[in-house]
Image (tube, rainbow, N blue to C red; front, side, top):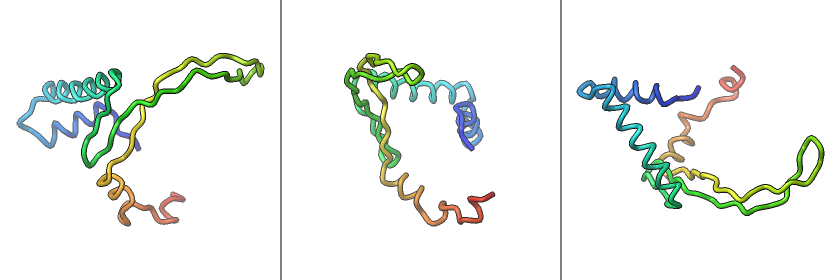
Length: 106
């Protein structure tokens, strides 16, 4: 199961009935925009307990076209990276969250 942006907004709105949905949408959009803008400026974004976003630079290299095998130049590019924070890692690896073998088969 995945969580999409509209579902996140709905959950926040339900847990905060004093906020209008349009305000929650604006808040979520602002947070995502600030993270995106910071990364595009080469800055690192750290959300304590959750994780850190950073940008990794990849150099220009020679790659291969998988269809023809022909050598092609792959341009240098920036790749976003995410490293989980300690609290998130602990929560993900707690005994309550690890599925048993019978649950994995279902």
